[in-house]
Image (cartoon, rainbow, N blue to C red):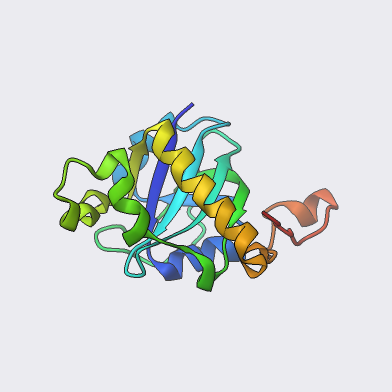
Amino acid sequence: MNYWLLCVSPANFEATKRLGLTVQGFGARHRRKVQRMQPGDRLVYYLKGKRVFAAAATVASSAFEDATPVWEPEGAETEFRHRVQLRPDVVLSDGDALDARQIGPRMDYTRRWPPERWHLALQGELHLLSRADYELLVNEMRRSGERHPAAARPVQGVVPGAAEAGEASTLDIAS
């Protein structure tokens, strides 16, 4: 099992939330990493600019390609056609997302940088994390959800393929 950290813009995280956190796209330069993703891998969302950790999900499929536009271009990445399906695990509301300035310096992954510049470790889009870092982040997210019931608000979105399968077309996610 691999543990991944996805660094995305707040706008692209909102686009993923509109899909019920059931699918995530990645840019072309991360194709090989995405091909390594397998069902059961874990993914944590870090929102660039806001410097918060906002959600965690479990990878529910192998990689596939889909060119349907969903996400806005970020830097050199203009298409996010390399995708995996997800199952949301923890989704925090905007106001209750974890302040990365409090947790980032405690992560093993960021220790190669001086403590005051830990955030430089999160340049780029997709990073492999240790199990310890993943557990630190998810445990803090769950604790935040327990302290702030508003953090556990359901995420609603269209579930891709649900209408064709005759299933409900929205997904409620409670942490």
